Length: 297
Ligand code: NAD
Image (cartoon, rainbow, N blue to C red; front, top):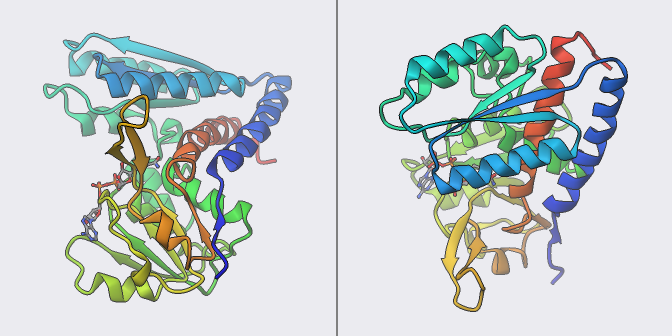
């Protein structure tokens, strides 16, 4: 049997970033330097790594990125005041607040204070509402990355049955709405499954395109997947592995080694959806800068 074609998220994210470099260069020639402010509160080691990655990747494509670091004891008011100030600064195109925040700060209140046009995470109700009504603005980065992977490999979703497993606000739910948009890479028949779905396997078996964002290691096995389905695995898990220097390896929600035998295309973990998330965040910063300056080309 033919094994699946591997969807190479590293290759696609590099392609996105190369294009962004050129786009940023063109914007700079018009006097616009896309700018991103990243809020980091405290020293959560995972957050420090994520923020460092976002800053470095931004700078690599020419985005003017700055990390605003705050002590764990910062007040909510202080953060809100800074966000308000930057909302009114036309030189700032995008803002993100790295979560989690300390428990004395209301994460929702802080995240929602960012002006919708500068919300490059795409989590603001305005941006989610615009997506829902079919006029998308800034898309949440991870499902935007899934869309970009399908586009790169010319995997059209029109008329296909897309099954999304997971209904989180940052992945599953927006992904399901993206594939309903009236577009070649939308126009799908979408089924959304979640923790309370009965007969999960029956729905999954019907998927032409299966998008899994659950957070359960190796939930999806070969027997559940239709032959020649396209399988997109968003899940990320650390699996203990003493043969690795760092003591673990990464695996997904899909049992890759066996599902690749039956799928037509499949994303690996790592190297599939993961690298796309930061690339699409950068794309959103550039999209935001263009929207704010009325640039449509
Ligand atoms: P979440 O915990 O917010 O949501 C999980 C969803 O899965 C829920 O909607 C729940 O209803 C559903 N679910 C739980 N158990 C289920 C089951 N047995 N059957 C069917 N559905 C079930 O998670 P999330 O933030 O959407 O993330 C999902 C996974 O994706 C995690 O492993 C996370 O680490 C990963 N993730 C990766 C990226 C990336 O950049 N690649 C980005 C975000 C999240």
